Length: 374
Image 1 (cartoon, rainbow, N blue to C red):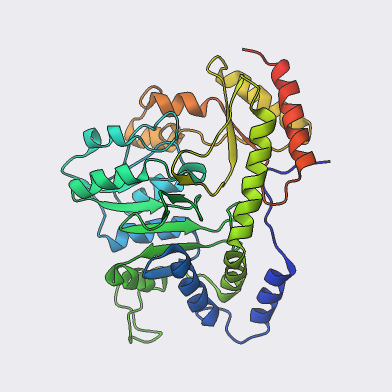
Image 2: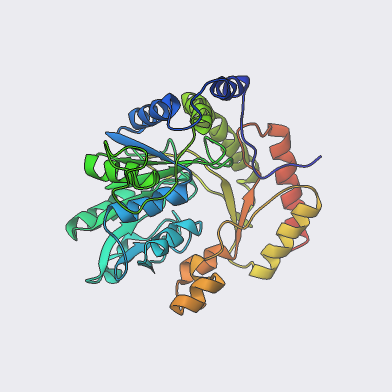
């Protein structure tokens, strides 16, 4: 039996919705797109939502809509998926990394001020693994320094901090719908904002630069084909309607892991921070301080050899070879990120993981740890 790292949760309702679109004449820029955007904006609590073909595209369009480009800097975290940084680079700007808080694993608000320069135009915080802790403090600093905030909420659909939903903190926010996310559209993303001007610009940019009333062959600006098809949107509409059920399923799996691993002092097991309603994206444990990178990697390989998929979420972005070459980053630049990254193990995590499967994962992990002591 193989236990997978992630699996989408697709029911007959999603299949029926997609088939209905395939039987219709509107496969793109049709009624499903508008319905998905409106439902998503209502769920998050923003004025506007703009569907795009990926979270990466969404982050990139936020940069362009905010006028961020060559010569500008955007502060973000080095402990994230690569797109948080490359979307900044795609716009011609420079990502400026700030190390993370060792508990929340999010960007450390106490270190942001020191990274702000005359070139800084925005802060891009990430709610890592669905955890919104510290986001309010990031926004307070940005507001004080007159900086835009682009929330990378791609991992955090359904999370909230002190009752305020993720996606409503920043000037703009972006969610992603890859199959390992809380909800999926196959591929896709959503931009959220209360600013009509920013939303209208993103609508134009995602659709080849077409403007309002300019027609199919009228183009007001350089744009892109970042459209989200009605096929994807039909899937997303049904998935979003199930978000409370999906959150509950994932919370239950997280609880099983917490209960089964709580007594093992070789592991740091994630918990839900105070004030956070956490929508779990993945379940990532950390090895205790005594473990080295080589031991972690051997543990990953041993788990995989026993048909349990695991991952190393996340390698430091600043040490990715092209990043280090382009910006001169080196080992030791962000010590908290590097120390955490050396010891992370992402365990199998998805809506329909059973308690028995969770128990197998935990039992196997403990057996592997017994053979790989620091």
